[in-house]
Amino acid sequence: QVQLVESGGGSVQAGGSLRLSCVASGYIYSSFCLAWFRQAPGKEREGAATIDSAGSTKYADSVKGRFTISRDNAKKTLWLQMNSLKPEDTAMYYCAASRNWDCRPGRKADFAYWGQGTQVTVTS
Image (cartoon, rainbow, N blue to C red; front, side):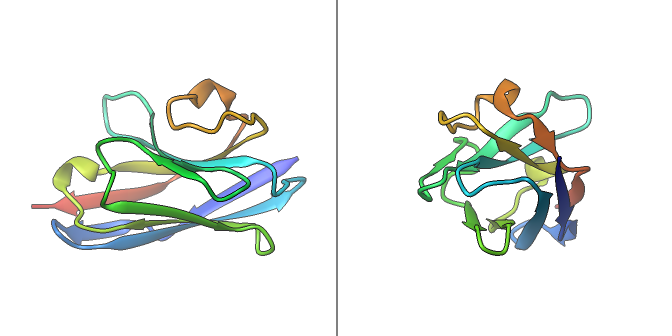
């Protein structure tokens, strides 16, 4: 059983920064693909960023250059550093884990484990 718990969300003005954290427990391995997804009201959940076991990262075009995903396998922790935030970044942010070797933000169906989410609100 894998549990994921996010924290770090909040309300920030446009142009500001936030750092999200996700702590894992249970049978989660360093080989897992880890990701941050987000879901805005009335929209589908979309992948923002992924990081594989080797530390290789991929980003959605909408966040590239502003968000940075990182992980510490020993601490079973995943982070998302979000800079230059925009109102359109407002969403519930979820961390997720997948056993699949193909680690990309577009492969939502591969992710079997999800956290409860943390809300990010960006005001203009």
